[in-house]
Length: 259
Length: 301
Ligand SMILES: Nc1ncnc2c1ncn2[C@@H]1O[C@H](COP(=O)(O)OP(=O)(O)OP(=O)(O)O)[C@@H](O)[C@H]1O
Ligand SMILES: [Mg+2]
Image (cartoon, rainbow over all chains, first blue to last red):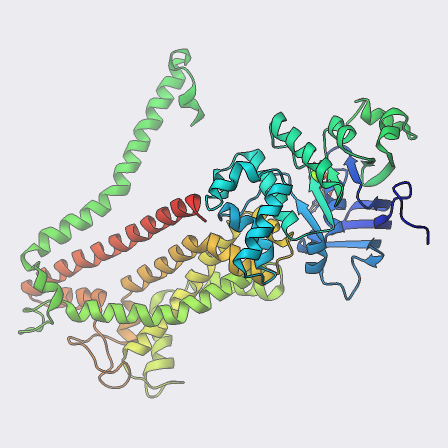
């Protein structure tokens, strides 16, 4: 095999002929899609086109909808995410997720970040403290909260809460981070901070982000995928998608002609 | 709600009249709703005040007819015993069933359980009493031959409590936001970890309220006791067998009121006031607890 180089991105998640159903409704139709390691991949498309369904399929968050099922193949480092012997809990440890609305736990700031480690059985206070500090720093929140780690997470602003949720996800050292419209409930300044943060994180993590905001997709991502009615219309380098899309439907969407 | 926000002066005459009428109706409804409570407290106090004293709470009934002297210590202790037995049965079973209904909400077994507990909620308490009698008490019955006893009554009351605790627990868990649960699952928490570490703590005041509702129900029951325990003027040493009956506040009121004795009627109403105040205090207690833990959770977590 060729030595890895930035010019040849390494596939992290590969999805082939992937379909998803909620009961009888088909939400995704035969999607073929690769997410590359240490790249930011953005997903855009009109409401209801299946972006969240796709994202949540990648860490098996949709398992909790009883009538949800998938067809086709989705692999993480070559291993089937929906393989019969796969423990979804382990997938979720490797593929973390941040949601649209900040959802901190009813716990202190410290305990929010420590939660993922605690459930893995980490008890040592010093280990926990180290990782909590590291994660809060990585989420660019440390300076704002270092003096009140034992305060309630609910006392933080919405933007801070969202960075706390990112810190919480980072603390379990995932390989992939899925972000489902992470900034849509935030003000422009908080949004800018989250976007900066993503640039910092991209050196170490594979990131996939759903966004309704096309400027945001253009600003932060390396690759962009356009979904429409449950199908993947086009995926390509972000600059290509926004300057010279191949599919006329993509062009219509990014120029605001529908959506 | 929104209507009050609008500037009053722009309203048409029709809307003004309608608002006034609605306001008057609300006031009438409010008065009708609180009158019974005030009436209960007033009547019980007025009719029972002659018997009220601290020793009324701490002494056993005496004299002739029994109860004309002394107080209601037997009833207070007995009701407490019944609450403890009923809770020991119904809290673990009901909370477990509620958890199950919440977690496996769509399985056939869960649907059947839900239907069953709704049916049980509607079974009249006198029927619970008669069945409790055949199963727990009578020597010619099906099961335990415990006689009229605290254990027979406590378990019967416990079975009445189970569906209450079950349904309230399920509802309290449903009120925990989905996003909260998903946040933990996305961190690789197992179902069990989510339930134990997040869902139950978040739902705990709701679950507590459900248990309290069950306890209040137990406090107010007489029909099941008539068949499984009847009554005791003293404090029993056993909870089964021929001397196993316990006192009970509601039964005490019921029995005293049936006696042709003015003195006992006064005692009954004094006991009624005590029982009402206990219920109100318990209710306020749990509200305070819920409020306090919400405050605490907001501050700390
Ligand atoms: N739990 C569910 N049960 C049934 N259908 C669902 C469920 N979740 C989503 N769907 C359906 O699947 C389709 C795709 O939904 P999805 O949430 O993935 O869209 P989306 O692109 O994320 O939309 P949005 O931009 O509004 O978040 C929609 O038609 C939606 O109604
Ligand atoms: Mg969505």
